[in-house]
Every structure is written in structure tokens, then in C-alpha cells.
Image 1 (cartoon, rainbow, N blue to C red):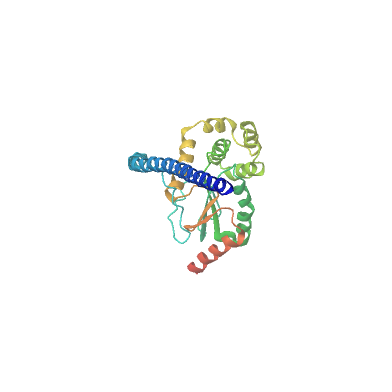
Image 2 (image 1 turned 45 degrees about the vertical axis):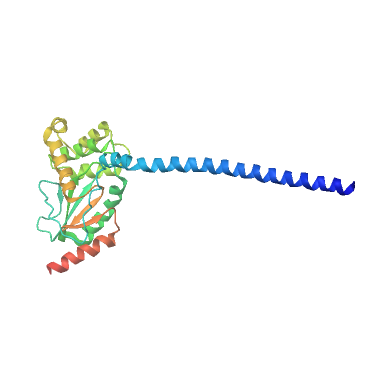
Length: 246
């Protein structure tokens, strides 16, 4: 009897193992079927990508970033009617594009003063307008400075504006105009004139032609220096220019 019971147990065990194997195979097959279906969906998606890529290619590409001036090159930089400090016959001309609301432009002021003290009549400084769109008060400040330039008081207005960049309101600019002795009726007319707007826009256009997009930007006898560099950086270029002319 024990042997018969043992035989039945063996048979039942074998059946259970077989059923388990069959069930496992079924589960594996189902999983493989689902995986295959997913792979087919992915394949179909890849087949559709060329069309989507073609549509993406048809979209306009963003404009390339403007090319900045090359410090190794020499550029022709027209001074025109810009405000100038220094002798017309100076061996070195530094043309600066500046923004009255730009803190880095303010930091460049002491460096330029040191250059003037160091080199005297050998250097002249030229100012060009480049109010940036990120500085909402800059346009008015540049217009006020240009109006002062029309009455021969540009640098006085320039220095007052940079002394307090945080307050460039029309009333403050008007106060500066009074303090430096401007004809206030003419000042008010000039602020509204097309001539001043055109002067500022002309400086912006010249900057774009040269590749200048930020402030401050300098050209020393046509050689480009970007940003509020230390005195040593300017000195190196100025000394090279003077040595060439010796």
C-alpha cells in the first residue's frame, strides 16, 4: 500500500511540475507578446520620424549670434560729431560705446581717468551712445547728455549721470541741466527733437556694423577691447600703438 501511495504522489508531483512549467511558459509567452507589440509600436514611431523631422526642418532657424569684433584686427572707427575729450592731434584715440545705466560702464570711468593722467595729450577719449534695451532709463539719460553736448556741456552731464546711476528720472536729469548752466528752453526743445534721436540711433548702427553688442566697448586706434578691463590691459595696447608711431 505504501508503495502505491508513493507512486501516486510521484505522478501527482510530476503533473503539478508539468502544469507549472506550462503555466510559466504561458506567462513568458504573454510577456513576450506584449514586448513584441511594444517594440512594433516603437518601430512604427521611428518610421514616422522622417516626416516629423521634415516638418521640423521647415521651421525657421533662430538667427546666429552676431560676430564680435576681433581684438587682433584693426577697424576703421569714425569719430564724427561725437563728444571728445583731449587733443585732436593725439596719437591715440579711444572710442568708447557706453550705456549710462550700465554699472560696468561706470566702473570704466576711473580707468579712463587714469589713462588721461598717465598719457596726457597723447590720448583723446571719444564717447558713443549705446543705451541697451535692458536698461529702461538709459535712453532718456543719453538724450539728456546729447542735449548737453549741443550746448558744449556733455562731459559735465556725463559725470553727473555716472555719479548716481540709480536715479535717472527726468526731474533729476533736468536738475543736472540747470546745475551745469544749460539754456533750459533749448534743452527742452532738444530733448524732443528728431536730431538727437537720430544721433543716438546712428551710434547704435555704427556699433552693430562693428559687431559691438555690449557695453562698455572700446576701440584704441581701431583695436578692440571688451568690457571694463583693468588699466594694465589698456596700457598694453596704448604702448603698442605709441611704439608703432615712434
